[in-house]
Each structure stands twice: as structure tokens, then as C-alpha cells.
Length: 141
Image (cartoon, rainbow, N blue to C red; front, side, top):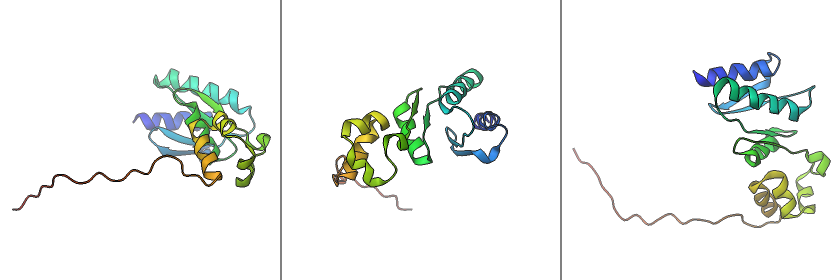
């Protein structure tokens, strides 16, 4: 029931346009926002969610769903982060190579380091070997 209330709140926030609200899960949505200053609108949305539900709300803003998803990771917990890639000169994948790891981290949070490493052909993180099985059980009827 709670996610339905959140969905209705988001639809109202998008000027009663349900086609602009894509619920990804019970606690994640993608919204298409046009014709307003996005950061002010998002801050108002965060306040409305807290007032009406008592829940915190992180918002990531970007020109695409992918960029907005990266921005929301940088906004957590309970924050707002906006990335404007065209202003930064990030329109193509190869553009990532022009920037430092620190710049990408500043724009995208911890994911920025992963983006930088991938763009430079480096593995990001560790490859974990599965633990060797030590016990096994079976039930036979």
C-alpha cells in the first residue's frame, strides 16, 4: 500500500502525467521532469516525500536514466546530486578519458572511479573466487 501512495505522490508531482513516472521497485522510481528548474523541483519533491511518508528520499538528476542512476548513488543517503554531462563535455564514452579519476568521483560518487577504470581498460574491484564447499547435506525420503 505504501508504494502505491508514493507512486501517486510522484504522479501528482509530475503534473498528473503517469507516463512520466516509471516505478522500478517499491523504493525506486525514474521521473521525466521538464519545464522546471530540476534541482528546485527535486528538493520540493524530497520535502513532500518526507512530510507525507516520513521517509527520507535521495534524488539523482541527469539528462538520461543512466546518468540519473549514477547521480542518485552519489546522493545517498538522503541527498540530492545533479550531473550535467553536456556541461562537463561528457557526451560520448571516449570523453570519459579526458577527465581524472577525482573529477569523475566528484560528479558520480564512488561509481566515478569505476567509470574511469573501465574507460581506461582497468578492472575495477576484486574478482572473488567462490569459497570451497566444506559441507554438504541431502535429505532422502
